[in-house]
Amino acid sequence: MTAGPPVLVTGLPRSGTSWTGKMLTAGREAVYVNEPLNPQRPPGRSPGVLRATVTHRFQYICDDNTAGWLPAFRDTVALRYRFGAELRANRSPDDLARLLKYGTSFTLGRLTGRRALLDDPFAVLSAAWFVRRLGCTVIALERDPVSFVASWQRLGWTVSFHELLDQPLLVRDHPELLELRPLADSTDRIAKAAALWRATHRILARTPGILIVGYEWLAADPVAGFRHLYGHAGLTWSRVVERRVRRACTGGGSEGRGGFAWSGLSRTAYRRMDSRQALTRATRGLTPEDVTRIRALTTTP
Image (cartoon, rainbow, N blue to C red):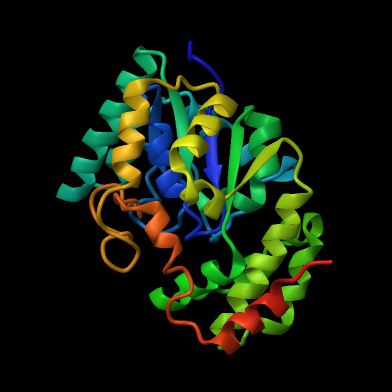
């Protein structure tokens, strides 16, 4: 038996999900599961972790297609690692090291009654399903739109809106995404990131049963913020946890100088950082005109 419901930490990529997920495992009561819905290998396409085939970024899961997803995610949140499925699919030395890492953490976590904590930004549009069908406690991170777009700009990121628009169930349930269609073939990365933020913001605002947390609020006072999230998730806050959070969130490094990493077996973006100092650099790389434009593009009625 687990000690409580599984936890899903989600939100658009670069909204602090990895940081939040790692801090919520500081009390050793939850097993960190990194981005099972990421279509990139690694961290995704690991049938030992999630025995289902991910075909799209922001793969949409709802009651109409639940048959292919519910058994797989029930295994994941129950920390049942599928060794045979993983070995059949992935056999490189790195794959075997990843199998050992996750297989061990899942097995020990299940035997000691720990909970699964999923860090998955690609689940953000399916958050309602995770609440309704898996009983997850869902925490959705939302970053200020200017800071969000600036981060994507610095990393040279963009998004293919075709991956969203080509999912009929997703567009049916979230018609806000139809607003993305005119930008589907655009090369304007600022406009596309801003449009994605706006549509996701509106979807999250009407999703029942989730807690929306501002990244800036959490970064400004991480100890108080994570104490609140621990209480919301039913995790134990202690002096040991507070010490670990304080050390991880007030150390050296910041985005662009160590605050972002995409390496290691889990391919997690989390690294130690001074979260308050990171806020002062949030709009780095944008012009005042860019900032004004992003504000206009993301203003919601």
